Picture 1 (cartoon, rainbow, N blue to C red):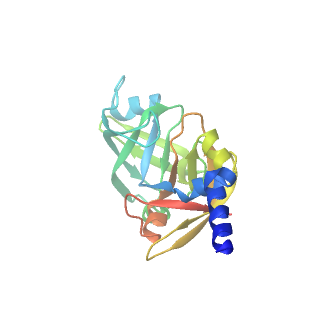
Picture 2: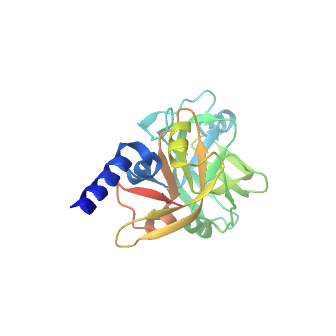
Picture 3: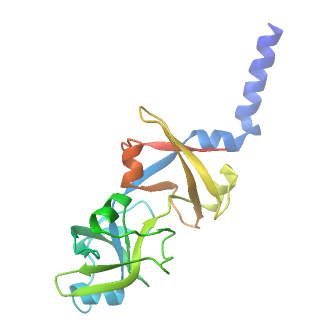
Length: 215
């Protein structure tokens, strides 16, 4: 009986706050599978859709202030192969960038590097085609680094910091561990893991789904 009481006391002590980081991790981090999409500059949108054109919101995305628009573009690679219907995400940015999976890149005949959003130096060329014109990018096609958005509080709870690379585990019939997942800390970020469609399919991601960070 004394052993039982000792074990129960230890469990209660942990639940009352001695291991907050571990309990928080157990709640899981929501997964968002990010399909191919484009971020467009103001000048790029003018070229593709006409001067002064405004994106039309289709739906809000997980990160505050970001949305999927009703507007789409066709992207063309060096091989002259094209992918139609690539959605533009808003709002406009100060650069134009297309995020692809490895499978998309093979179809286009290009080899985009794995990069954090906005890091475009030395990335792959690509042409965007819209109803009003085209935009030829000498740099701009990337495969986005796997990343987790979180606030400073989320980072403190999980004992990580901005720029860390962590491992994450997907449970289920196709359980999978992914490495080199970037931590991105922002003041208003919504807690969310972003992976591309290749990673999402490999882990058989079904919505809603959560993952945990491995130590």
